[in-house]
Image (cartoon, rainbow, N blue to C red; front, side, top):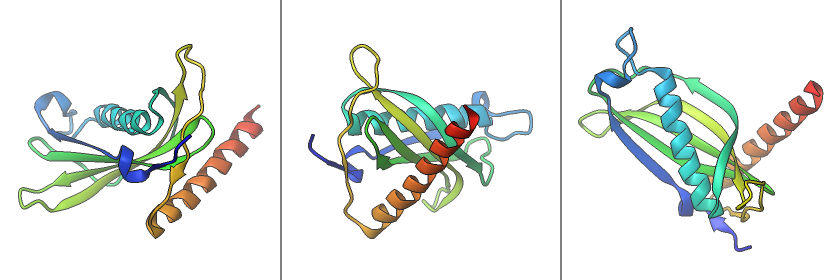
Length: 156
């Protein structure tokens, strides 16, 4: 299988917040943001694997700031790790000011699994790392992978 780069599968989604996405505190509803994150992660994983995917784990979801009505919300997703059948995707969410300046409000790591035509896990292409930043992300993703594996073993 031919390796693919991080940039090959990168995805961006942009939303302008409307009342339908706002909670009782006049902020972006966390569940709506989680939905958008899952969609972006799926697009990244589908692009990388060339397969349908399913969400296996939401590893980290850190809310660092709020979004309010009429804010422009930008979600950027990219792959950080490719295993045998799974991929870890990082999705960062920003508020974009009218000046174009972006402020990070959320970081999420999602594990997606590639599926064959019978909806069984299937092999994914290796990830070709190009930059030092991509190599660092890979090393951190390996640590998260090992922690997830340890937690699974402890829970069963």
